[in-house]
Image (cartoon, rainbow, N blue to C red):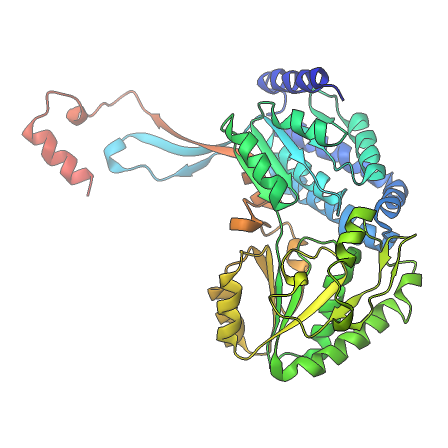
Length: 459
């Protein structure tokens, strides 16, 4: 898309926003209903697009993408009216007689830039929140998931006029052009490197941003953990979407006393969930493209492979792979893996594990498997991370009742449900001062009596 076309879309949306057309809550809910209907009637096409881009099965596509989007729409339809109401707050005695309240207001024209690993979910979820809050939106899907991007464009163009929601397709040139425009809010999901560039470009217009990034999310297996259940849930979370999940357990950090037993359970679970020949499993996904396929293979040290390691260049598949022993100095521990490799690292005390995790960049997620409530409390209290689970993986993001997001190197801001509505809203603090009474104490000339009143009210 040409630069002039992109500028016209942004200008058109800003005019439409300032017309007040997006402000009525009834309009927002109607827009969400229209979007939900378009998604429901295209479930087969969505499944096909996700299989083409990422090799996802129809079950996984609905469970991890389409179903979660429909759930977010349902939640917002139910709660948008309540979220949009003014909220009265207490008024200080010094402001007698007044009414103080906070008024949620949409930012205006929002830019949503989404990644390729969950191309439908991570485009539509923030869009749902932006619409519920009353914004217009320009949507930029990832060029690495072209089939899903084309389908998103089809859905949006059918549901909405360009002045309300529009899709811009393309690659780096379009991304650069979009970031040079003046948006009222930018929501970006992707890598740290690109996130830094987004924030740099946003600073030119002082545009607020939400950055949903990633990082090396640890999965602690404490010595009291139920190893069979831990292995089952870790294998699910690690190899879902062929490991291409921002909140996947990046590495397993286990107590040295349970390492061998845990590895045996993990091996069993990989065979149970993916079969003896995972590369022949039709429900096992693929790596997004050859570039990432080569990058992931480059992280495998053959002498440390204790299960898996196989790959198929033609289908861009890498088998679920377990690596051990692994240290924090190994290549696989120097970057977010974003693939089906599971390094096993050990610690000798929980205090050692906590100190090591806190010495690294803040991860987007953290998981701990333990039967000890005190150990769970200690880790969740003392470690810095975006969100996570106790005795499970991944599932903390699959709810609209809690915000999802990271901090520091794993991002800033959050979304889902009320947190998503808040992300795309500015809360105006307003005092409605009555005119029938006007206390004289704030006006000059100041008198001793006024000073005493001020000290009475403000203490």
